[in-house]
Structures are given as C-alpha cells and as structure tokens.
Amino acid sequence: MKKVALNVNFDSLYFPLSIDRKRNLDPTFFKVADRFFEMAKKYDFKFSIYVIGRDLENERVADQVKKWHEAGHEIGNHSWTHHGNLGATEPQKQKDEIMRTHERITEVIGEEPKGYISPTWSMSPTSIQTLLDLGYIYDTSAFPSPVMLAAIAKLKFNSRTDQKFDANFMSRNDKRVLLYGTRKPYLIRPEKLHKPNTEGLLMLPVPTVTPMRLPVWHTMAFMWPLKIHLWALKQAMKKDGFYYIMHPADIANYEEDFDPAIVKEYKDELAVFERMSDTIEKKMYLFESAIKTMSTNAKLVTVREVAEDILKEKKYAQG
Ligand SMILES: [Zn+2]
Image (cartoon, rainbow, N blue to C red; front, side, top):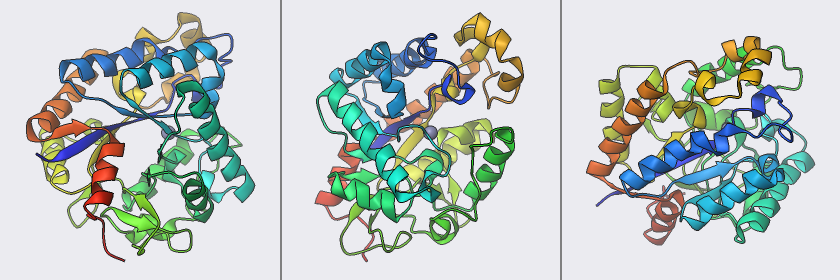
C-alpha cells in the first residue's frame, strides 16, 4: 500500500500577534493541538510536526512537545523565529535560525530532528548547506508552483503593518524553484536548488497536480469545493513522496480558543487572521474528510518514513 504522510507546520497562533508568551500560555500547544491528536488516535497514525524553536523557550510548551515525541509523532525544525523570507537574509542569520532550533529540539526530545521546513517555503544555498552539515535526511521547503507568488502577495498584504516582514518575490533566493522547479522528490545541492543533482539532501517538494502545478495542501480545502479538493488529493497521493500539509489555524477558532482578554486586546489584528473565524465544527469536518480519503487509499506514516523509503528505493528524480 502506498505510504503518505501528514505534516503539521506548527505555526503557533499567538506568535504572529507578538503576544508576550511568557505571561500568556499559547493555546495552540494545548487545546488546539489536542484536536490533531484526537484524529491521530481515531485513525491510528502519527503526525510529523515542525516547530518554531523560540516557542520551546517556554518550559510548559517544551513539555508538551516532548510528550508528542514520546507518543511517536515526528518532531521537525521550522526555524527559530519564523522569519518571512528567511532564505533572503544574511547567511549567518539563516544558520543561527536552523542550528539554534536544532539544538533546542534535541535538548527537549533527546533526539536530533531529521526534517526541516523553511518559513514561507523560502530556501537558499545556505539553508541547504546547513541542513547537510547537521545530517538532516530531508527538507520540504521547495514550493514548485507559481501559486506561491499569489500567496506571497497575500502575505505581504496581511503583514503590511509589520516593518520587519519582508516577503518580496524579487529578493528570494529560490525564484527558479517557484517558477519551474522539479516537482518530484530530488536530491538538492546548494549550487543548484531547482533541479535534481546526483547527490545531496532529499528534497520533498510541496505536492502539486495538473500542468498548472496546483498545490495540494489543506489550506486549499478552504478555497475550493470539498469535492474538488478531495479529487486533487487523490491525484496527488498517487505520486511518490506525498505529504499533506496542515497548520494549527486549520482547526482553530480564535473566539473559542484564545484567552478572552487577548481577543479583546487584539481585535483589529485578529480581523485579518486567516480562516480563524470559521467554526471548529466546519474545520473538523474538512480535516476528517481529508484524513478519511488518505487513510482509505494509503498507509499513513511520518514524513521521515516516506523520505527514508524514497532514498532506499532510489525513487527520486535522476540528476
Ligand atoms: Zn510556518
């Protein structure tokens, strides 16, 4: 049976609001995360969860992540501060972001992470070299679809008041990946990011379908009819190296999940918060529909297991 994986890019919800998380415990790691694990229990599978290093500075959050690891879920690296367009920053900053998170995760779970996803899928020669140096098995930062250009424009619009946020397409180091990068799993080298090499780190690009390279990940379930989404999901699942990307925002609602004092204080910011006003009921329905489709047509494993099989069976694009 085909193996596919479930990947949670764990963008904690208090994070973009710059809430003082020392005083306010982020519900994303508690009641929101529990919804992921309820489903994992019901359908008997493990997630691959990529955490933001800085979130693990809070000991109660770190304890939660340790529990997830002990329950068999894979914990991966999603950078230290979730800097938008990390791949365009100073090489030293990129290295620090990846290494610091690597060290903190290792300290918390007692094992080195082997998988990485860059914030806003922004990669660079430095990120690839750093992951190779740290002994990573795979990276999921390639987004080989022009649809990302629309997403970048939207991110820029959403964060227009944030001076630190830089999501310009022109400054990205991976323009060729976004426009016409390889869609199959491939071996990536710092000197050539968009095409297969004969050796290097295993890149598992964001799954895409049709010649238009429509990306298949859970956010799309909110954009088009569910029937179409599940059709696209089935198409994408037939390919090697499929993983389904989710975010905590996919199963959360700020009025139900956030501290009421925070909802009041951050009213304006929350108004532009992506898909956070949909009911949890609707969201859980979309989530379960996707899980059902995957679990009836494939075996759900971690991204690491998918990656290791591809390497063992040499199922990557030839360079
Ligand atoms: Zn993220």
